[in-house]
Image 1: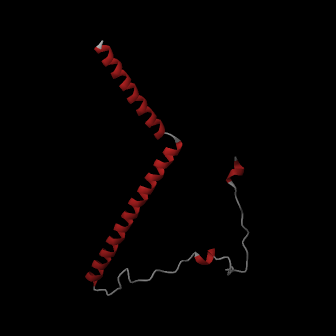
Image 2: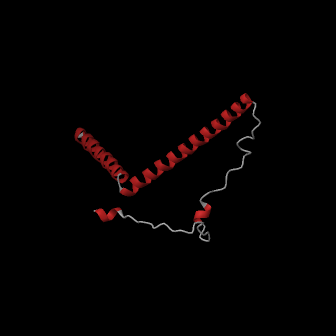
Image 3: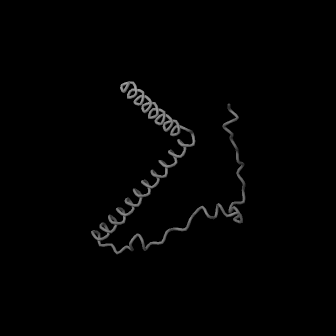
Length: 115
């Protein structure tokens, strides 16, 4: 009698465990869950790339200072230099007028027309 009760309980526990495990895996494979996982991985990768870029920039500044000392240059540090003005600002400005007086015909090509 106790053997049957033990095996019945063990089987029921194994069934509950397997059902729970399968349900968790199915929830992980839903489109929403996969999209969330991909977004988290993309954010994590972005942070790693940002950290890498900051490390590279710091190394560049350090190496530039070393080379400046070795060559005896009195150039201002990279932090002191002013960045150039953005070039695309005029192109994005709706009030800006083109500087040329002639017009070049534009040819639009739609790739979807070939199919």
